[in-house]
Length: 110
Image (cartoon, rainbow, N blue to C red; front, side, top):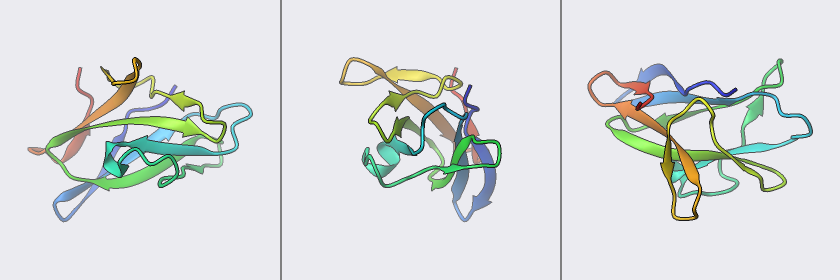
């Protein structure tokens, strides 16, 4: 199960948010795709840790909500099972992370 994006540290007025996804059998490449990169399928490749889990840290603007998904090299689109979801125009759902302007931290919106 993927963990919720976590606030790492404040960088000027922006917030570092780490997105994670657990190890997936047979997956050799994973990308983070969302409205923060205009849904580019390849702009944000994720890295694997020693435990095989995928992660990527982005610097994002606080005070807004971001929609995102994970995409594998075989073009499978995955949601973050630990995040809330919002419908998308393609008939499925996107994962959502809300970054609070007041506390400069990443919060899941329940």
